[in-house]
Length: 410
Image (cartoon, one colour):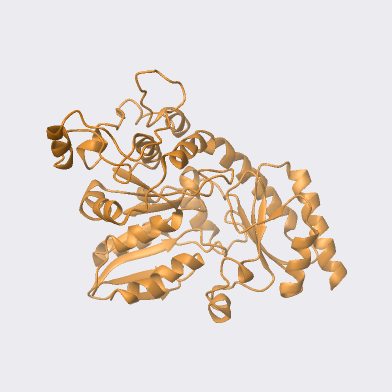
């Protein structure tokens, strides 16, 4: 880690680096107190006590290893950061209070007035707000493009372009960006490449291995995995964290709470098992919906008919847990579908053990407006399904109930 107070909490990782991801997620980032606890300790404290005034001075000068204040660093949060760092293969990781805090910090800690960012326009509504509305307020120009088009990335580059930003797969259209190709263009342009990897999770896609510079997560989603706590993470090189991210986080304070970090540590332990099961079921759900009366189209990353299936199979090790589909009847049809469900819950969250469904046009992407939604292909009949851990047969039956309601209302 970047500072001595955090270095003191960082467990030795050399013996874990060569182990399988599943093993790292159980044993990585753990250190024990003098009590020798099995589960990671939860350090619910705001500050830390010094042996003497001289030690306090040395801590603030980074001359003495140890902790100062939980907004700066905390032992439980440090364990979460180290565990996800080991999984992602990054030099450094920093935890944040939410996923949006992670996106905001990743961008605004690096960019400054006079800079230019190029971003794929297919993204979560709040991410689009940061790029399209917030950045220009601080003198940072932004250009939104079709992230699927390599030529569009190339043409958007200016002399002051400092960052490329994109989600892949994108929310909710499951558009894909070729990480390796865009990262190559970013390096040629001298731009930092930042990838929001929340839909794929680090189990199915590791952007750093394809040339990206920074990865961001909403840990609220699959990393927690049970709808309990908010959190986020930013991962990248030591130079990026030390020279840009570290001080921004310390001074602006989007800190992950120790309790949430402890919950996320427990979530990481079961992440491989959950993602594997959810991905297998999601693939079956996509096949089940395809060709059903009342379903206009189905989007799933690994389906052969996905327009970018070749990219998905090149950079992802599975199709993921997310399925988007469009039902007949527009908004009215989509609402009838949702209201008829008895097992799948209506919620704008995702990555939960429970299957969740939402109508992007009236929830997650409502504020971007109808023109932007039309440009992205988010129709009034589109629904986004986050597949949980329920049995496929039960989910399929519930979806059929929704489709029957669509047909009845047509």
